[in-house]
Length: 143
Image 1: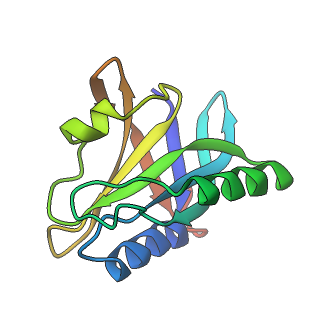
Image 2 (image 1 turned 90 degrees about the horizontal axis):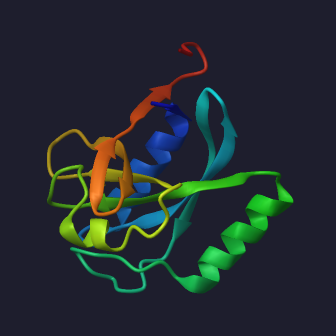
Image 3 (image 1 turned 90 degrees about the vertical axis):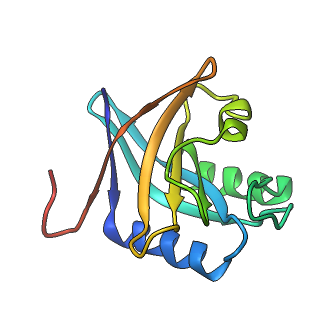
């Protein structure tokens, strides 16, 4: 299984953005680099949840296109997406699984239901999901 790495400040940005948008689900895209060792998330995009709902999200198409243009301009590869679950666990819901059309994408889900947010990454394909090895690291500590 490939390792997915993300700097701690990106994790903090996702958590802060998701908390600012409570009680709605927050969402966005992930970009970075991919090697034989795994994926490195280098940039997080914060997109509007067009539904403004507490239990599902729809990415704004205009925001998506702008993010893809920015990725291309900065030599980044689309790696997947992320969204929050304001009051449910950090695992794919039935709707998340149904709407996971890209088997190459990583799907990060942030749960805000407990005192400490929980972020996990998932591979979803053919209606099945498996947890990916997500590692959040600081500049001082890289593994």
